[in-house]
Amino acid sequence: MKTAVLISGTGSNLQALIQRWQAGGSAYDLKLVVSNKKGVPGLLRAQEANLPTAVIEHLAYPDRDHFDQAMDACLEKHQIELIALAGFMRLLTPWFVKKWSGRMINIHPSLLPAFQGLHTHKKALEYGVRYSGCSVIFVDDGVDSGAIIDQAVVEVLPDDDEARLAKRILAQEHIIFPQALDDVARGKVRLTQGRALRTG
Ligand code: GAR
Image (cartoon, rainbow, N blue to C red; front, side, top):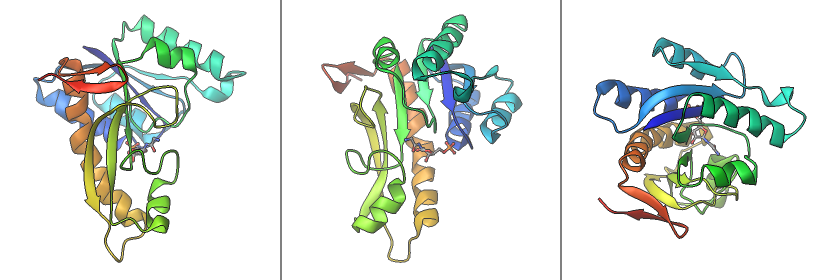
């Protein structure tokens, strides 16, 4: 399935998707990387993998609607069928989410529905949870509220700070995100009545 990855920064999850794709046999076929910020490391990772890139800077558009229209036009131009949000830090407009419903997934660094939004590791440490982790979801028009495709659990250790916890969770993200994208591309998981339904 022709797949675009949307990023805003480092792109380590993008790298994990690239590695699985380059190994061969994945049902997703990477065709495009879009960043809403120029000069971010993720763009270099894409270029090193010979992937077409596009920079669509949100600051260049008067509002979210126009920004999403520009992204949608770019995705259509590349005949994209599936979208992976890999550290893409922009909220998307309801029409864009609706259009790509069931075909757009996101990786989030917490065990949803706990700790939606930003600063998840800080929130987890402040709350004092014993376990955190990461979740892959189908994107809906709420904030990190979509149907859960997969999750990985990470123990919070007594001496954890945000950086240490983030590092261990990121390692799990790199495992479950490529797998979830492959499962969706393969049709093994489908968005059905607001749930991620597994058929294979
Ligand atoms: C990842 O931890 C991802 O889960 C998180 O941003 C990081 C991006 O890292 N995404 C969100 O917080 C989305 N709400 P990466 O650029 O190295 O993949």
